[in-house]
Length: 120
Length: 107
Image (cartoon, rainbow over all chains, first blue to last red; front, side, top):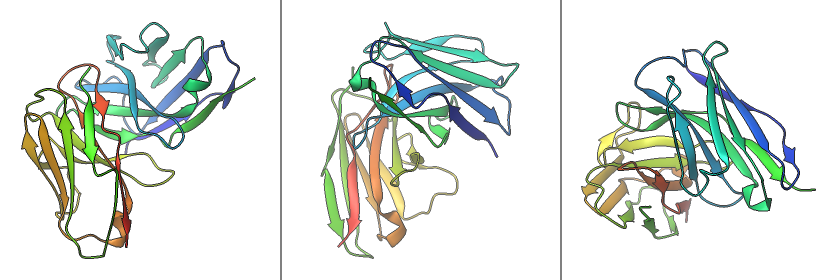
């Protein structure tokens, strides 16, 4: 069974950079036909796709966040990471990592999510 | 970006009732739509993909239909464990976007 686990600071100061890592177990992150994604959900609100990365390193980002987002992959550690720069209170959210299947394009495995609060 | 709308935003129904949620895309997305169920404090779970295909292991009381811009999600007989928020999501192009969600509870 594939498991994804987010890790990183739960509190980030405004204007600083948010950094999260997703560790994948129970399967290889290098497999073809899967993308590795970040999705966030502000408290009490809906879901927002941030972006994803293919094991080769090819990325796609939401245009609304593209100037501040970087997603990278470390196949040797079976991890992928998110950095979001110049954060504001609007970036406070539960951040989920997820696998996106290239077969049916679903987000079929998810981490439990981690709350990141932006506050001084 | 393609905008997704859902209605209603919330509903209450009795156990055994048929529940219907609609989702509309701001432009033609063909069949490229999924439905997710999210319970409080949990990650979403995919139920339907390609508008009408049931994900493996999902009970058959869940179904989806539609194409183009208008889609329907149905629970044929509401069960207590179906209490959740349901989201539609398109994957026709980047950026993927989700609907605002429909909260379902028991009357």
